[in-house]
Image (cartoon, rainbow over the protein chains, first blue to last red):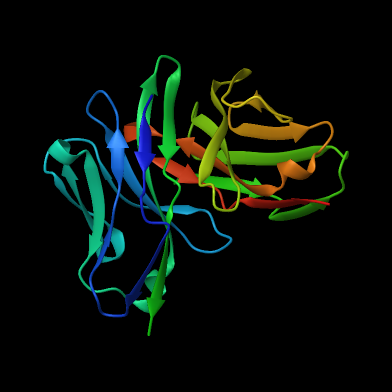
Length: 115
Length: 111
C-alpha cells in the first residue's frame, strides 16, 4: 500500500533562513505527489504537485520541491522563510484505485519561525 | 470557478448525540468526494470517499457513516457520538489532474 513518511514532527527556523521539509514515499508505480499547508484551524491549501516531467517543481509562496526517485523522496524547500510561513505542512501521495483515487497524507511537520 | 462549502465550522456535541456534517461543491459535476478526519498529532485520515451518487467507500470501520444523496452533496453522520469522534473534519473534492480542494473544516468536540 502507498504511504508517506514525514520524519520531522517539528522544525524551527529563523526568519530569512532556508527551509527543507523532508518527505519519503512508498509506492510501487510512479507516484503523484503533493505538498499542502495548513494554518491553524483552517483547511488545506495546495502548495505544489508532481506528476511527471521535470523533477524540480515550483509552487506558490516561493516553495519548490524536488522529486528524487532513487531516494523515494519529495522534499519541500524555500530559500528564505517568512514569519507567515509558520504552519503545518503535509506531504501526500495519490493512489489510483479501480473506483477512484485516494490521497494519503503523512503525519505532517509543524513549522515554527523565529523572528 | 469551483468552490466547496462545509458547515458548521465548530460543533460541540454530547456523547450519544447524533451528528450531521454537510459538504457541498459548486461549479463542477460528478466530482470524487472525500471525508477526512484530523486528530491531534495524527495527520489526516481518510474516512470515506465517493465516486458518485449513493456510491460510498469506507476506509476505516468506525462509528461514522457517509451519504451522497445528490451529485455535489456529501454528508457525514453518526447515530451516537463517542468521545473518540472528536477531531477536525475536512471535506474535499477531486477534479481533473487529481487536484484536491479542501473545505475549511469542522471542529467537532464531543463532551
